[in-house]
Image 1 (cartoon, rainbow, N blue to C red):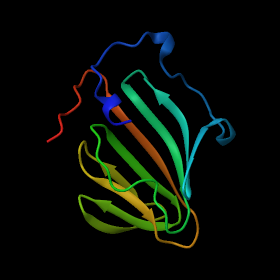
Image 2 (image 1 turned 90 degrees about the horizontal axis):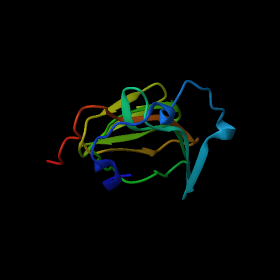
Image 3 (image 1 turned 120 degrees about the horizontal axis):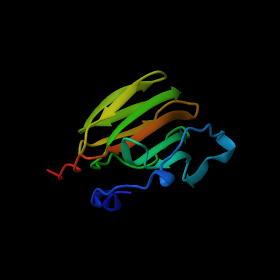
Image 4 (image 1 turned 90 degrees about the vertical axis):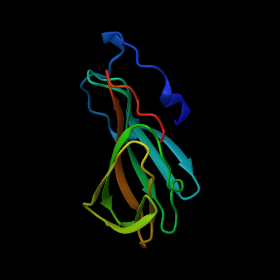
Length: 137
């Protein structure tokens, strides 16, 4: 997702925009890794966003999807089940059901499951139309 997200801003024809819909979990695209699965629901452009990504991550105890990382898009993560540790700019903080993280562009962030049940979190990441992606510091 990283370098591809640096593409120039361009208009998207209305017929290619994401429209109102309900997507059951069974219809989401699943990507599996070592101890985790990520379900992508809605991706692409909306009326006000480009390169949007919405999804659900399920991480088994002791695992993480990837180490803390950075990207130019804004992102929200909300824990819906389980416990873990957020890492934001090198600082670890407990993560529990109901907690939410906002990650600013280019700020290092990640989460690891430190509990004994699967950790689930919802992801919403996007770039606002008409605003250039911030350059990496």
